[in-house]
Length: 356
Image 1: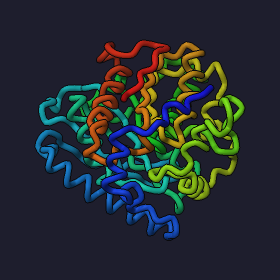
Image 2 (image 1 turned 90 degrees about the vertical axis):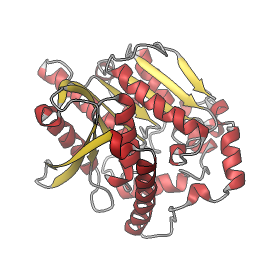
Image 3 (image 1 turned 180 degrees about the vertical axis):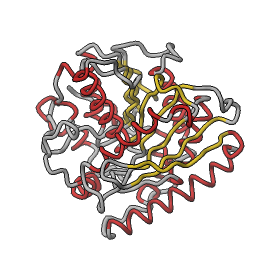
């Protein structure tokens, strides 16, 4: 495989770097203590998110409520449930369970205020943000267990949330996509074991982190230098050095665990996964694992949509003024609706769309 052509720099990214050369590295000083790094990054995200949330009128378009959920180990996590103001409270609607990105280190309810509220508005549906616990205080598999606890709570509190538990999809970006993939894989395995129907309608995996560096299948790529882990190793928004830090703090006891290496899960489980939409960025260090996962699922007969934002790096959506950021928002929402069988237009199975 050779996906290296998708890394050719997009003109809008070149222009941003020319006008703001240090912009992609703001808030990410790898020399900082991890907790300090998290605090700085969260503060930056929260300030931007709240400002745009108000500027875009989302405070009037969407309502939200916060909930406390018990976890597998007797602790608690927070959930924030968003609902369009135009959606009646007594209407049981389809919903998205959302997990945030940030390398399992960074993230907060307020830091995702903009994206989750915006998704709820565009979708016209509830979005429930599960705010799992973070490294370095909480190592693997805490994040996966919290993601599952959050999903279970949502599925068993449909009336309280005003959602239809039989119409729930999951999604997330980066590490959030890891957790969306994790709960979907776990639910598929459990449904198989219990001989029952799958409870997740579909998954939307945006710039997903799906394999450890130790297990990355470099042999599937036409030349190591063309692999995104090498080709895009120095991209400022997620350089390999930062991914290595996230991996170190994550501290997975077994780097071969299938929940860290989704590419190598068993065929009979992967083939039973629900509809899957995968969105990757061509200049992202994580690009190839998302595309390889898409190919694996397609080969097993899973309905799969793939979109590639050519020439844009990991997490470019943090830059709200980039022209493709609006398309990113719309595509995330379109993908959710597709998994919920609410929008059958657009990409068909086995077709890939390159966003330019």
